[in-house]
Length: 296
Figure 1 (cartoon, rainbow, N blue to C red):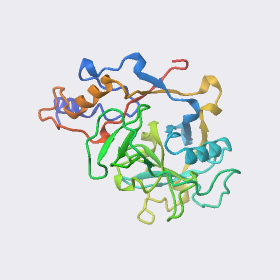
Figure 2 (figure 1 turned 135 degrees about the vertical axis):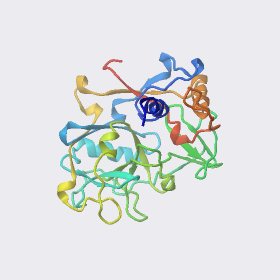
Figure 3 (figure 1 turned 90 degrees about the horizontal axis):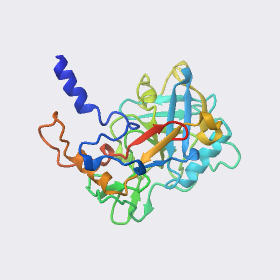
Figure 4 (figure 1 turned 45 degrees about the vertical axis):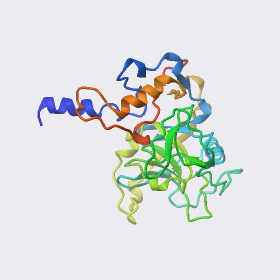
């Protein structure tokens, strides 16, 4: 492959590769202003530290899965995940972590089966981006940067790349939050409204998506316990010393600049693209998140 071909390919792929990168402004109208960036609260950021110090940062969906997020906060505060592992990595699907033995007791006050929190009544989208897809009659964004899917009566968080879901057994189990997974492949939207989405990886997804694939049970389980990836710690940013807390901001969606950004993604106009798509799927239009310096 020639150098020029590689350069064009890199140009075509650059925008969607990093969830945490600032939006690629294809028109001046789509560029974010300073006031469009809003700070994510410390107690909504989960810091997962794997072996070798690799870190995965998750924004918790406290507004949409409050009972599951309450459990996740209690688990982090109790340091329950310390010494557990990533024990399942299924190709083009998910990386899952927790206690593979399922014998570790839950901390006090963690609810084993909270409310389902798979969907809720009403439509909370605000950007006017309502293109339907096979899984939802409409899609859009909340003002605080979450991607949403819905129909005439209900809304839900879609299973996009990087979505963090709560693993569960067969119903009536809803999952405590002790076993979590992150989507590392093509968006498995068939899981929408069947499992609670409790967050989104906003930085470090590569440390999960690049792990060796498991072969056990047709589910990507690591058959040899030595393959499991140790988890050193899981903490809320609010548990960390002030000078060690990661700072992230999401791009607000309730303004005309974000609407222009969506339009630019529907019909990309840089020199690589010769045929505009005429639309964009919700998982390719997630509101950008960026890391900022402490105090930023």
